[in-house]
Length: 425
Image 1: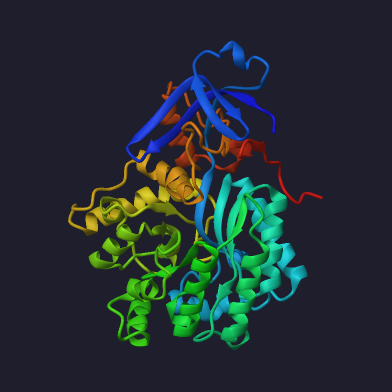
Image 2 (image 1 turned 90 degrees about the vertical axis):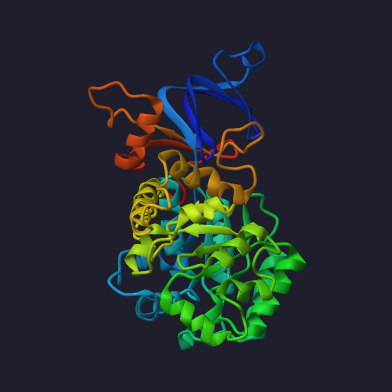
């Protein structure tokens, strides 16, 4: 791997409270990792490839902690419905199509292209119940150069007939993927019970065992909708709460874990997530669209729960984390009003952090330009957004997030490798 130096205006958030700015500076990359940032280039780096982006902004790549690949054709459909009717009417019929690998390839190709286009360099993805299309999705991510965790969905009850799995077969298919698909440095498997209502106790128990046996992460949904929370209580009457259902089956922090939505968690559940370092994937657009509510992000941050942002395609209607950062800050303001101004709204720095390092930390040292971090980066040309007034770099970045789009992204890097648009032939 070639070593290189990039010059430009560098911005990143090492913590949620700090935006670190390096104007007209050099960022030094060796073997795909950040070595240093400096104002003057030392002679020892003179032989490195130099890419001059003077006047442009260099930021970490965006991270999407929760999306559903097979739902991509449905984006924008049925968003006048609540969660369960939307699943029954739109989602389950679409997900039933993915035993057709030709169809799957067409959808996945468009999805991965658009993730690249919007600057999402890492993502955590639900596939469908289908083993072969899940393997196909992983291989297509590997070919693209983008980073991802990809999970075969498991569900053996309370779903459409064509998606109802045999428990034993579902576990066997999942274990086959875990055995075969662990070689890529950038694309890895993740255990994926859809959510507690669609999984029997036997299914949840076996999935917990697999996660521990193969030391792989877990992803699922938690407390997205009030009807769902009531349903879980009916299905698991002996469990203390929704989060405890996952915890009882070793699916809540025994290995790295993401729970999406977390709109209606009790304080006890949030404390449990904090103790177990379970990530909350915040999906503001999906929560709006399906009438779910607004996640109290501030409460999670105050209790030490790691939080990242997510598109939740296709409950969400935008794949752009740039848009979702703005939407997250806006949602926090509504939650501030709803809480009688007790839960302070997120600052711009916090929103940017959640869309980069907040989610990136699930992948390790990702989402920042601190020394030793993977160089996942976007080069932003904001010249079309700048008006008559001179702006600071942070103000320019605010304009990019709130008024920019994918056309302002001119280059994308993952682990120091420039990623070209995938699947163009």
